[in-house]
Length: 265
Image 1: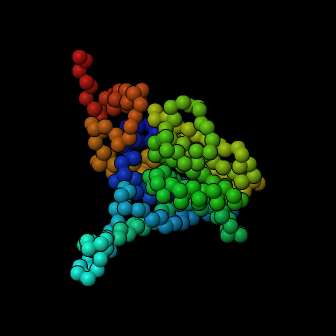
Image 2: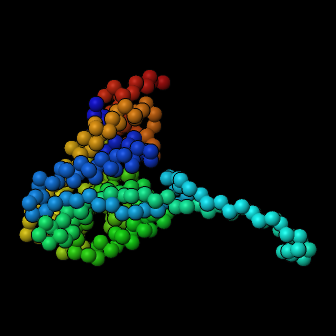
Image 3: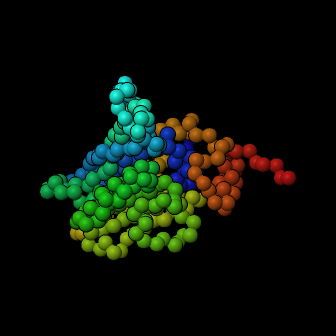
């Protein structure tokens, strides 16, 4: 069964669902692009290491504990008062491997285009700062950069660098930056009620753009991932909606049979 939403499904933004969806979006996007790119280019899935600190959405597997040493009666901390020794707990960062897509020239091996699909870790705390550093490095390079953000605003990433005022109620965003015109960013800003874009994927200047069909890729991810069996549309989504979005969603889910109509009071 397909998602009832015409575009991004906000119920998929739940942290426990996102890692699986992220992997599928990367794999199916690469698969979709491959026939358009060959034989001059090839889409390659690479990955980087991200460290997630304790207290974030992803919990560490290992903690190192140092037992307290025995209290020495001969040690003095303040006058004649001796402090007891505490145990020390070191919380280790959780290492995650985060995939992304590189479009590579077959002839030279050079990376021509980089496609990022944003994860929750890229939008908060130290993970956001590290991602911004990586992003700045890409924007200083001769590489096309596409950032796909299917996690609800307002904590946008690349979109922090420019104002997006239309449509006023956009929630998801795809940004396309070409190295020969970094000051001009191509943006697909998408409200909850709209389908996702079929967005341009730039290559070398002499070649036509490829096209990434995000609606088809998300639909396949939803179907193959069995999300219709996992998501409960009778409950509120895991993100905050505006009143207009909530009213639209309620009417849409009732119309499609995912919720029962509320009796008028």
